[in-house]
Length: 500
Image 1 (cartoon, one colour):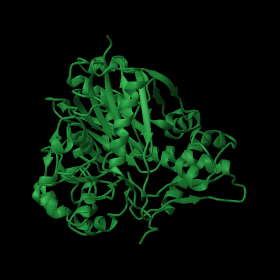
Image 2: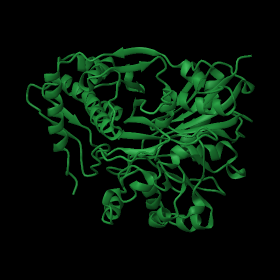
Image 3: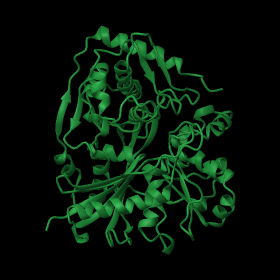
């Protein structure tokens, strides 16, 4: 009988279960969206109990669709939206509050407060690889401890548990109140701003600065090993053997195992990671230093990362808030109805700007409008914004790493948009490579789990599964490229300093 590896992909807008075979091909997939909660401007929340219910449902559906018996699934891996923070009670399993999503801006005052100290916005960068920003989980956890009645007391007693979404799912899958495992992997821990990148452990001085009780934090483990077994009826007895934050999972799924190899994932936001090997490389150009992965007993691998908050989410915004399109897929045909952007630029700084600018006071702007501009030009500006932001990150990464990127491996939902991919190659002035398998995030989690149980023997097994679907080569002349990038730089500067 054939055997498979399952991956739970808990993302920002939906949860999926994808079952893969040994060749890294999809056997079955099920997906369910969850509600986006906006209690006030700049706040973004998820109902973590809804996500847990959806997780059970998509696992069951993925199995039912192809009639896959439990005994044919050798392991399950988990990949998740990073930095989204949830706290729940160990005895009841109930969350104290909605999960605070990575895009949430409510900790802006805390960022400003901590940035007044010595070192400013970079005061914790030497230990964590991260600047002070609303993005990371640590300040979200501090906000919860300071604002949710009774939480701090429960946390100090050891009754309140914290984690990113991977930790919440593992705890529930392995028994929950009956003794669920409270753990995370090094990639997710590195996104809390509470883990020391050098020791790969929670840092006591950071916990003191953030006033976070150590008792509520999960155990930090490698990204690939058998952590425990599922007790839930959807996958009873199946080992949970891989955990990776979504962007690190995509790096693994793209088999970027050599230093200097990089990938860009085009999803809700854009996330460009470059493997720097076992060397921890600090950034001087506004990038993050983060953990790439750690396989069982091997040394940890690090990465440089450029995080862009809003890319695919801008297409959703145009669909849901403006009603210019009814379906996200329509953005490409609308953009193709015009020859260029008509002089229009869209800077989607809805959650401030992340890499390489790190401007929490930035807000979205549409610049260069004239009466000539149509919704087609606006659609084109929406897509182009993703490509321009990616170029900014690539240039910063090249400067930090001291190497030029020969090509860019891409994945995620937006890579099916050939207009965007061609424009990306044009403004980047380099080839953009789409792999045959674009579901690299879930695939990376499957790879981590499969390696831990011997389903795949080594990294060469994984490399053999990777293949190219299409390569986009640049065709734009240099004068046009420079003109467009100059316009983009003018537009992005207009977004700075909107919030006092």
